[in-house]
Amino acid sequence: MAWLAVVSSLIAAIGLLFTGYQVYLLNRQARQDRRVVLDGVAVAWRPVQAPSHAERVDGRSTWQYQLVLVNPGRLPIDDVHIRWFFPCEVVRLRHDGITDKPRSVLTLSAPVLVGGGERTWDRWLQIDYSQKANLAATYAEVSFNDIDGQRHINRWPRRQRRPLGQQESNHES
Image (tube, rainbow, N blue to C red; front, top):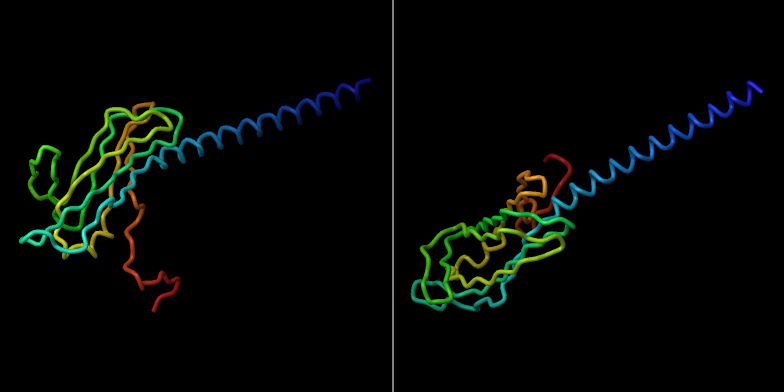
């Protein structure tokens, strides 16, 4: 009967090891899921109206952009700030007709964005029409606090785009 106790203890130990390994895997997956959710807080933009020519004497044209901030996670984020970087100076046209000073960085904010939520901004901008081809270099950084109060900064697009025609190579010339 002593061998039965030994076998039983061995089976119990193997079960405990298996359970511990499963808990380890679940915790690792939870950490990975949290990282993906926080890295997935994204900002995207698109021109709703893009001009086909220079509309003003100074060469500027009016563009309407829609910018969307998305929180893919289940939990809210707060103290959200977006810095939208342009490769040239832009002038914001406000709804009341007032124009801001030319600048290459626009800032947008939201106090809180609920989990699974999104926030949309419409912006009318005057941009030098000759800079149209350079607008592909536009990018944004979104900074926010997670539910634990930790600050995060995500950049979109994640890396600088290459001009068309340039290929990535894995060898040196």
